Image (tube, rainbow, N blue to C red; front, top):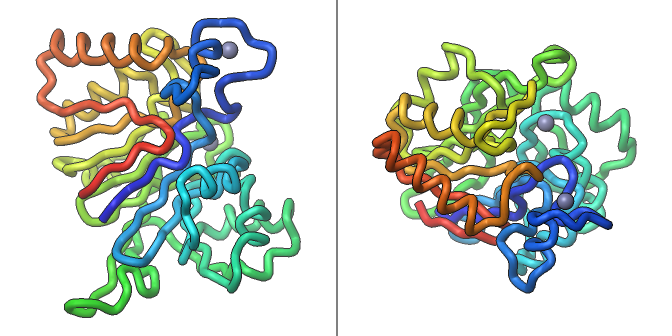
Length: 271
Ligand SMILES: [Zn+2]
Ligand SMILES: [Zn+2]
């Protein structure tokens, strides 16, 4: 399975118009890893592309990554940066595909965007495993990948209104928006090989709805994660190379065995 990070940024992309700070200046350089669109990934297995979240930068992202088709989509939660590209996706599709999300999420999407003929809603329920049809496609031997939706706390103020999921797929968990992980979900995170995790705020910065760099790394240490990929990277970060250096220093100082990677747009990993 191959994972492509379509976007690794926060609610508002980086660089931001008119900004002269170091992160935005660095992000304007050619091929800069500080440049970030809103968070989303594509999981590819053979000929099948599974999209997680349809960010408002969807069209730009598929073009940049030369993605020609999407076969199914999962939505983590009903914040605009996670679903705002749903009309772009709907118009871009040549034929209908399934969209998997919680009922509450679908109601919010449908309230905002009424006409989505190319997206066929499939309800998913926390902790109830589901199969994405043809993921991977009927192959050698025929099997379907099982996906487990794990509830996490992200919008603490409005949790009921904005329920949020992480997705466990084989030896990977994708958890792009989180502040705390409830005990029942946390059990599934333990010893997972690959974790893509929210680290929106930089080391000493805090916000009520996201983890910061240190929280994310120390959590991965506690959970004995093999490889940690930091995503949802926000504007409080320094330029990519500086952040990378400071992260590796933190890893050494805290004797962390997890391999920590600062994800960037267009990054690809193979599992
Ligand atoms: Zn800026
Ligand atoms: Zn969110």
